[in-house]
Image 1 (spheres, rainbow, N blue to C red):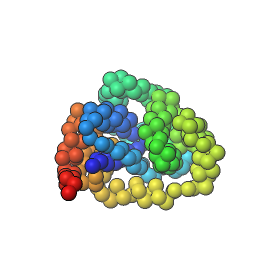
Image 2: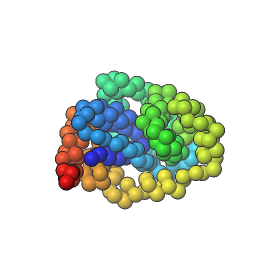
Image 3: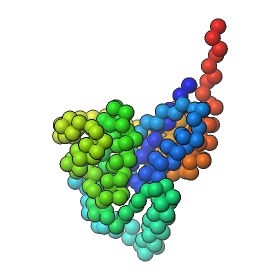
Image 4: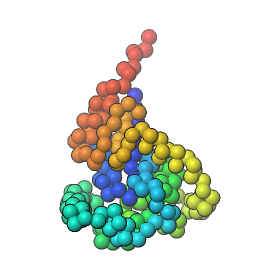
Length: 221
């Protein structure tokens, strides 16, 4: 039997990049379990316009108190430290735009259909958090598609046509209705879930627990 893990995450969430690396490491720790990792969309701020916003202005508007800015600085340093341990090069100083992640989620959907969902997630996280690229721009998304060997003409046409817009929006809304308010969240077989960028060891235990909940196969005959 297969454990289906739905990873609900946003592409502008630094904890989600950590979460991707850690769930992949957890899967490697449990070779006895067949795990299917499925990526699901979530927008931390679905109110952002398609063109995004200036990053500094956006962040300063959300965090106004000196205490909040201090907590943010501490969190960023913690992320940088965690990232070094996971070989993730966070460069928050390179980010100039807070993009809408909606179209990036569409790209992940198409890549996932070709078995390249993880490659798309990794490429998008790298583009945003390491290189400071605006992953809300169609031209950047087409360029990222090329990096993971997707057909760029098809991707450009899909982006321009609005393909799968309703499907991605409905999928993201489904997880909000399920009560998910923070990401990453991992859902096993739509039965049990764990939230947060937990360590690979904890996620491996979660996978083992999820596998133990599967119905046992009856012997033939």
